[in-house]
Length: 357
Ligand SMILES: O=C(O)C(=O)C[C@]1(C(=O)O)C=C[C@@H](O)C=C1
Image (spheres, rainbow, N blue to C red):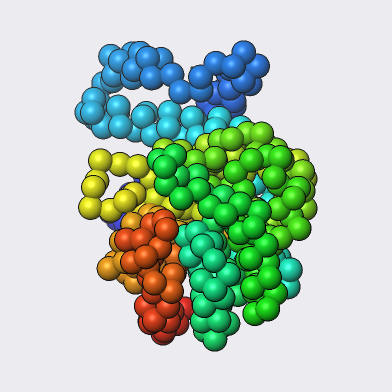
């Protein structure tokens, strides 16, 4: 008997659910119309004052049985969903977004895939200091089966009195040594006018954190047909990061790799704060491969292994690490680089769980 009563009431609820569905979608259509107008006039999508007014008015009409706080909470969820509907519409336009391309982009660095089945490691010294130094690193990498060598030839340093890099000579060293050991070169370019020249020497153009919003540099990188490794800015939101990538991709260079390298926070025990949540969010929002720079994000050697594991567990396509034959005498970032034995050990540990090349 009571079972029948419940069934009847449930039928009623089913009907109400459908009515609610229809009405919230009707509401969403109106919100979208407002969104179109806002877009046309460049008005901010989120309007907290309007939301507050609406909540007040709704609560005034609330006759229960839900209490006012519950009603506020429910409607706040509706507003939130409406807002993300507006923002989704906006993001739909981005070429780098998942909405535009559901399939992962695999960036081919010559014959070497980044963002494919296997995780990658980019390793090498912070700065190119000499051919001998690069050769020692390359030899170890070859032995360990790591293919992507990094090394800075143009160094954007905080102090103008610090080592500024060997410039084009540094790129030549990288190219020569990489060819000798069958490796691919990743190196940072800081000036738009150098992009064209750099394509002769590097396999991946790196755009560093300090230049993430150097729009002329991004445009220049978008105009060539070389993979680009774009690092997240020191204080860039993920949205700004993706817009920076969009600058490159929208110019026709679709081969972009994103790199989370930590952001600036009040924490002093690490050089930067690794934003680990950036990894799954970027993978969700964008089809581009995502790497994590475990050296710059931490600035310290002692936590590289757990940080690398965290990055890969969070879904990163690979990690970047600074390695030097003798870190204590390195001309830059001496305290965060690992030596070659430590590189080997790090890789050994990671390979127990991950297929890292
Ligand atoms: O009224 C607006 O300006 C809207 O964009 C609609 C709406 C809503 O869902 O009601 C959506 C987002 C804003 O934060 C405020 C209100």
